[in-house]
Image 1 (cartoon, rainbow, N blue to C red):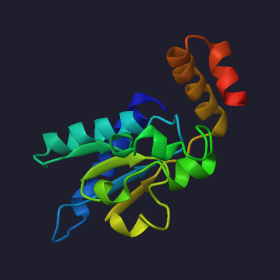
Image 2: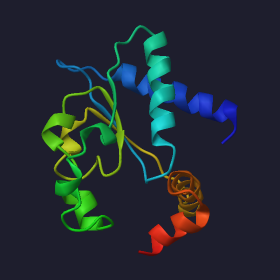
Image 3: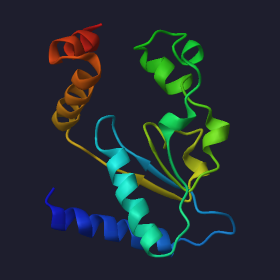
Image 4: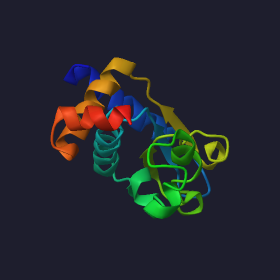
Length: 149
């Protein structure tokens, strides 16, 4: 996405947020596939909102993870464990601008006043995840081994 288009997208999202009125602090969820740039998008949006004199509490789903023993009890790479056991859902329902994976699941969907879902081509998320994981794992080979396990 070129910078002009991205700026326009961020501006339209900020306009959408400004248009929502609630009796409580507005809660916005940005739900995207893993490795899709959700944190960057939410950070950029928070900057724009703050520049428009909006108070923003910026949080990410990663701030609300249960301890490893609880979230990995079905296995470190368990999809069910990631979906059902990883998050302290009660704690995450109290913030304004939030990004994460599976935020639009049935148990959380009604917690958000505005829901943003970002669709990213699967190949792009794989490339981004491999780049991210290779930095953490030490090499692309190590990251690829983790993917296969």
